[in-house]
Image 1 (tube, rainbow, N blue to C red):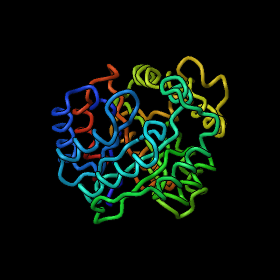
Image 2 (image 1 turned 30 degrees about the vertical axis):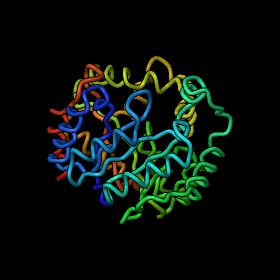
Image 3 (image 1 turned 180 degrees about the horizontal axis):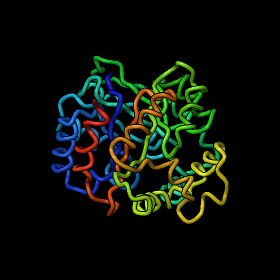
Image 4 (image 1 turned 90 degrees about the vertical axis):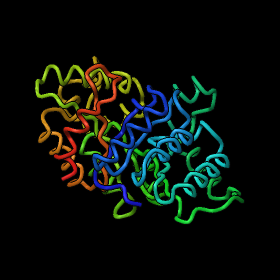
Length: 293
């Protein structure tokens, strides 16, 4: 599977009809991005959405960032993973994650008391799951959403790698140290193509506010020296600048390079549009020459 060095992470495709999402994915592929990462929250089901996008493209990898282990049982996930991987050899990357308590307990009604143990058991069940349909010609691939050392170690031991989200560059170096040379390291990097500091940080804070209410992320940030004071009001300038790369094309390219220098194999950029929801195609076009050359 060839992810390329840089891909895109985009939730906005959920907000348009499926036919438009397919057309958008095809244009992303034409620009040269190696992979398109899509989330799973309360929008489209991740395996169905991945199949739609794979059907509308030719070679680009479609990755889930991430499919929640609480959205379906492990046998179902194993069947879906193998089915999509058979239909689109070497083009579907399953990203699995434990999500967050507010979504798992609050929205889905599941117990979230032991997410690490739940992930480990889920991987065991997938490994042992029966699948009697026609097998994939290329081995199906999966990665884990991982922040802390235990989940990073599990990702390195049991899957093809890790997909950290909402992290500073320092986390990439930390993750690579934990994982060693085992597996892909594919961090997400939010970006704002705006050189005015006030405007860029305003857009960034609009994106960050919700994530700063989630303990998985705030606890991880404290590993890297951020304090409670950094986490309020959408984040301090120091935190905003660490989580969201902003500036011109060169500044954003420099941040992506910093992740690669720290040990990332693939960086998926999440462009934050000023209005928060529109498909940022023009920004993807502008960034492509700087990021993909």
